[in-house]
Length: 222
Image 1 (cartoon, helix red, strand yellow):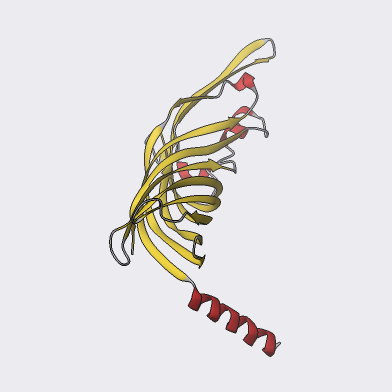
Image 2: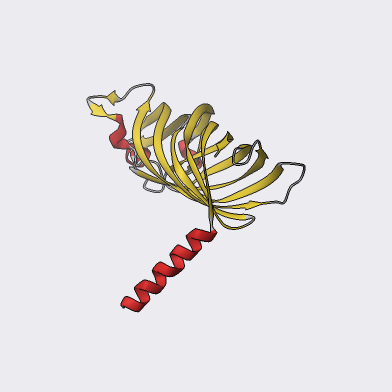
């Protein structure tokens, strides 16, 4: 057991010595929306897309010249305005349930991605492609600009955790020995249901609402 432990420590130390880590700051204005998994009879509609903001720290951990494991920590806002209308027959009469919600959610995100870099396309300029996902934890929520509705905190209706898949690309520009500017686009596709509210409201456990977004990413690495 001791020999195995020493061997693992030796390999990790050697890998870390060969690897290069680039740390930076990133700002990501994001056009956010929602998509629905629900029957047509509920008439779910995306009323609008919203411009939200994401900011955070990134870390690119190079394990080869053109390949890096990329992670970081982000604060990101998501959500948009949605509506639904459902009419059902009950005891010979029609009952209509409808609503329109402007959803605003804030998450702390931990991305887990792979970045692939090209060789120089022009002096000091390279392109990159990024693919992976992120694990997100809800930190705040509002619906229709309210944090409390009918005496209950809005944040309680949304699930605590969310997972995203993401894919994107962009370019980096070398400014100095260790300073780089970068910019690109990333598509964020929510993989998990953000809440159970509509399932309970409409009495259908098969309803899901998920986040979507396209971000414009730019920042600096040191």
